[in-house]
Length: 176
Figure 1 (cartoon, rainbow, N blue to C red):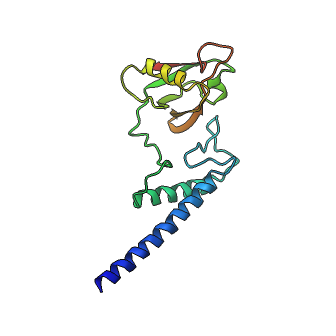
Figure 2 (figure 1 turned 180 degrees about the horizontal axis):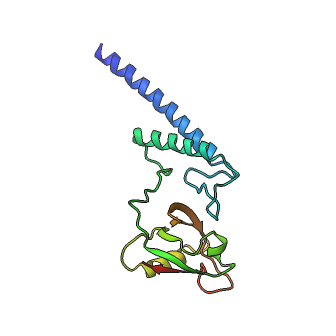
Figure 3 (figure 1 turned 180 degrees about the vertical axis):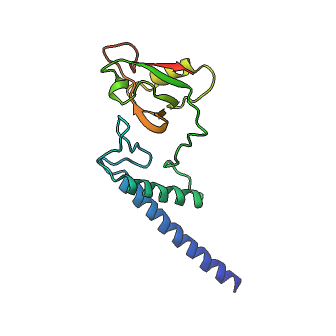
């Protein structure tokens, strides 16, 4: 008798898992449609205003459902919609110069943006060299940034690239 209960319970759990995975995939597909914000993309435009092309409350609700399903069931995947905690994150640099028409300006960076994470670079030693290396090794590729702008944590992307001016970004990071 005990074996039958275990088998029935196992089958039930497998069905629940399949339904949950289907639900998670549907959420990921909905968020990742062309023009959509994705599972971790920015909900703000380059000037820090809510994007008018998406339904932000719906996106946040879908991301919350996805994060809850992932966390409560131990799902580990390449999709990680976990929100950054501004209390834990400490800025290590501030943008104190941006050249007009530079990649940094075109990609939405602004004077005074505090850098919390630039690609894989976070607070620590040798930051200037690490920032240069990160930009050079990702030339032509998207580099995710976590910044604090006017007290709000934001996710941005920049693409280090050749342009008419110096460097690959056209901005200066002052290490804090």
